[in-house]
Length: 253
Image (tube, rainbow, N blue to C red; front, side):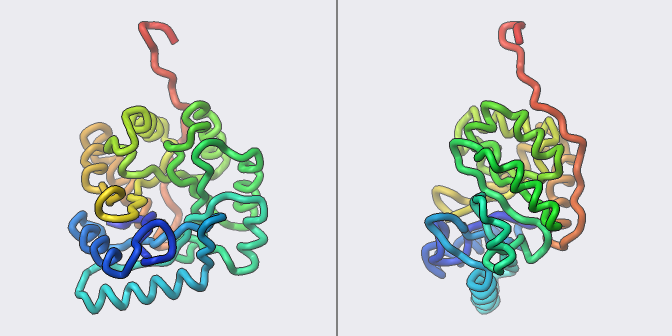
């Protein structure tokens, strides 16, 4: 299993604070059946983790894991908060696609979707990048207006939901909405977004058990294989997206 979103690199954002924390996270990942992690430190107004530093940190962590005989491979990536000059900084060599492929994480603010989002997503695709919107199920504007996400996906963006959202870590409403995104073919990956082994751990085994129980093994294979395809730089599978269906309440829409 491949985890495409994880804050395992030590001391550079709000994830692992030390190499000891990174080792603990690596050991827990292996227990969960994960063999490859794409390390995705934040790139935003608080954390300026640029491409060269991330690549170096991932290589250093791989050396440590080899010495500790932990069977886990770290690939470099980045979780980039959307902003207007994103493509200029990409051209300048500051930003890093996942595993140095064409797939690129885009994080939206938790409370809203910036007006320029659609334009940035379009411009990225024109440059040959494939935007992946991370944890859309936790964005308040998308929760209120899921048609917005439908439009992004229909126009070529991919999305990644968080394992903890499926297990109820972020509350019942987000758990329910995450399920609706799966049902509507509006997501393409499950990842841990793990920051530690206590409050923000991996939850991948539990999440995939939930997917299997509710949606069947075909959906499990679809989501796991997409992570494999992404890490290899290959084209991922996409189902035709649908709008999130509003549920009836007391027989009334």
